[in-house]
Image (cartoon, rainbow, N blue to C red; front, side):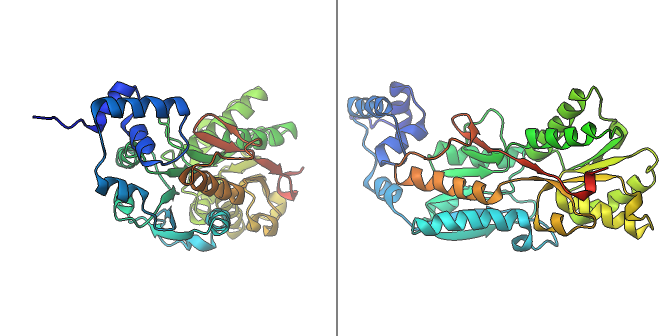
Length: 349
């Protein structure tokens, strides 16, 4: 009786992953010629042939680029600068390539079933926003990767994984913000960060610590505050900052929404702009320029990040190599775009 070889056996003989075997045999994505040769030789040696149904399924196209949006309670995502800019960049590249966007929203406390979207042929590739560092999310992404589906994670880093990721250099952006403050003589700096379930929050903290160390200072643990990237969490942090204004001469917030929330909260407590500490935000949203006083902020190229994420997936889907990556800091899978500090009146002595 003939025993039908499995994809796992082909992978073991060729010395590659099952996902790579799938990509080679289905003609998906750019693959090194040497890798193709090994897989095809192993497949032929073992007599492995994917079913006609599987081949047909793998090569089918929906024409949709999926974008998974996070669940954010009581927030208008499309009006938020962060999301609107990234979606604009993604949409522009998709339109140029003749693809449609299928925007999907997470539900609270539920892991997204990414693989089902591909199995039901709803999407050809997927961009994932709002991923958190938790076991359920990681498992779902690992399954996607193992099955060889093209996807990209934006604004979240999963250490030790080989997912395609697009992000900005938040360590350097935060370091620049702190150095801007310390170079002007500010010493008592409060840092309002986001939740540490987001890699961006951890990277911003690392940048703050680096900037302080370069100025031969340390971050006071009692001045390390946590919000959730919402304006309301900035309003709440304003109470703690107002109580310690004699100990705080500058505030760095991990996004503009929180920074502006703190400003509004201080004004609500009767503190005049003249008595504000220095402020630096992050993102350089439209609201930063209109804040009172105008808010110094770290500019993040969200639009370009969206374009890059879409281009990498579309290029992979049609078997093209990514182009024009000279401005990126990257390893083989993670691509970081540079940030830039935009100085305005809020942080100038």
